[in-house]
Image (tube, rainbow, N blue to C red; front, side):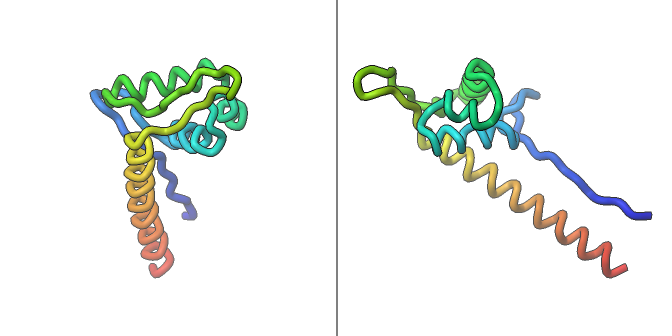
Length: 112
């Protein structure tokens, strides 16, 4: 029988999602563009949805993840806080470990 092992990884606190692949993509897109609206557009979600994800993550963690600057002559923008950067790094480490186990499982399966 042929099959493929799949997985999804997310972080929870008190049963509520803090971080998953979608939220990680959102944070990385905000870092890339310096804008929540541009990040949301890239990911094909509304600004309102992006902002609700950010607020939920911040509330669940009790930490600020995004620093925003209101527009004006110089324009506004958003950037990640150190806590957001650390969250991404930690999540990436977890993903690497899970992928390593999955790859080892695939190698073991092939040997049989």
